[in-house]
Each structure stands twice: as C-alpha cells, then as structure tokens.
Length: 214
Picture 1 (cartoon, rainbow, N blue to C red):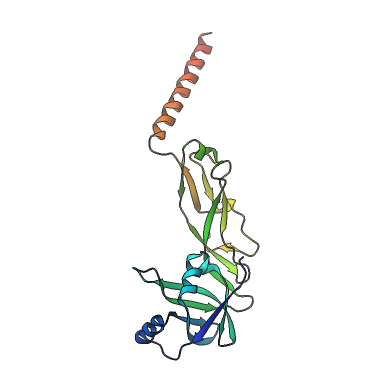
Picture 2 (picture 1 turned 30 degrees about the horizontal axis):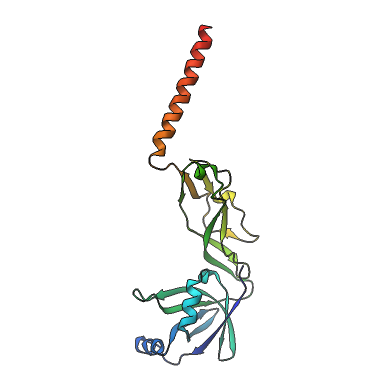
C-alpha cells in the first residue's frame, strides 16, 4: 500500500456550472467530498497538482488526507473527469474513509517474468484478459497492484486468480476462478506447431508399426 498523501484544498461557497468554470479559470478544479454520514463538501484543488497525481498512476487506490482550511479529512478518489481535448482534470469525487472501513477498488495487474516465460520466449503472445481486478480491501491496506507471475508458462497455458497470492484481508469481488491472462499462439506460429506435432505423431506411429513387425 502507498503512504497516505497530503492534499490542500479550499472550501467552495458556490456550486453549479458557472461556479465550476470560475474555479477552473482561477487555476483550480472543483471537487466534492462525500460519504461517511456527513453532507457533501464542495472544495477546490490546484489543477496542476491534481493532473500530476492523476497521471502518476494509482490515483484511484491512493488514500489522501485533504486539508480544507485547517480541517483534515481522510478520503479516497472515486471518480474524475478529464477534458477530452486538453487532458486536464475537470472534476474529482472523493469518498470519506473511516477507520476499519472496507472498500471496493479497481487495482491494476502487473505481470512478472514475462521475459523468461517459455511460451513467450518461443514466440507466444501474452493475451491479457483483465488489466485490472476489482478487490475488497481494508482502507489502510489497499494493494498498489496485483502481481501475476508468468514464470514457467508455455503456449496454451493460462493464469487464474486462484494462482495469485493476495494480501491478508483482501479478496476479489467475483466468486469464481476467473482467467487473468493466457499465452496464445501467434498467427504463423500455429501452422509450425501443428506441423511439428504432426511430424512427432507420424514418427511415433512409424516406430510403433516397426516394433510390431519386429
């Protein structure tokens, strides 16, 4: 889990499209802190800092402590919107986090030892079925990623969630042994593999017939 990060914000006294545009013109972006049994709190954050945090990765699995005019609230980002042209943040939603709370989060999958996997070394292609996995995790123990080890996997092999070790107290939200990735046969190599298998089969058949005649 990454460390809790500090964020400074200021309270907004106005909401709505016009107010949000005014906030953006001032170099900030509008945001809302909600949940935890309290009323939603409109705030404004520095636009450049938020862009840096969002594009640094792990934004939606990072716990922040937002300082709003001296009052600190622990939160986790739940959603954000980017300008489709400029890629600048337009709005962020934060959920209040309470002690002992369990959260549902989308965690990215990281693949290890792909360069040593036999199937990939033979020309196989890593077919990623899930780039992220939805997990139930304690708020103070959200993993930054799910690590999947490809060591020993050959063409045609698959890796399932049952072979992945999750941290204590962390579970998936899907109650089945789903596939995360496979090592597939690339176009062109399939014909070579089939020809090789056919040759092996013919050789075994010829050897068997020769043994019968002997």
